[in-house]
Length: 372
Image (tube, rainbow, N blue to C red):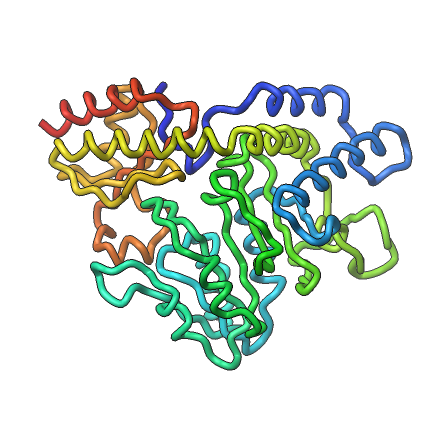
């Protein structure tokens, strides 16, 4: 199968990212750090090594505040639900994923926070810093956003936003699911909390997510259970134990360690490949009866609309041509309403650096047959 759904989950995993997980299943089948025997302590050493690598990769200020979760969605929920307090005002954007929107909507509906959503000033405009900053109030405590649309691949200049609100005391939560692994990210430059989806862009198997936060942030736990330390307290007082209740996914964390190393080594070449692939696809789509919603980008995302609803088109591409794409709404309801594509959705092609121009040509051949 030709796999063009990498923004959902990266289809190819490097050799060592797979082998490290297999090694952990075979030889580290113990609860990391929970017991005093050699196997448990060895598993904890592997977890520590991965935690240290993540801390270094994102230039975070505290190793103990690198938290392993089961996925990026859990990391975002942990950040939002663990940070927000009664009467806080929070700002997010129209292009954000339901993993950001739904916990915020929940807090708003239950009367915990007041929520504002930033939109572009007009349908033909892009989101600007001013569209966000004009929503700031004295009680604004958090801005939660994704720098990259998971639907269109458009990049928002979050670094300029951080500079603009510097000194305000407002915390920044970045949903890095589509960003991290494609571009370097330095948490020391004003990012307070970061959620990451390693299975998408850090060349890691499924089963682990990451939440990283700096020393200026304190989070309340949203799950409770065993920690292996401070057993007689209602809640552990130290990180990461305070937020990592229960058994960690050691095989996935071992895969993450190798995946991050691979990502660092190939960041520049991957960027070049993805810009090239999106450029080639967009140029070829211009000759077809489609409406294109993306520009060439280093995140590997191209979205388009046809006369056929996107879910039907995606199913046809899979069943008849053995091409995996994403149809529908990509968990971004506000963006689709804004684009007026909330009826049939969009077809999303999302590349990895392991895709090829030959595969793009096969997709174009299939689309020509389907749309003729």
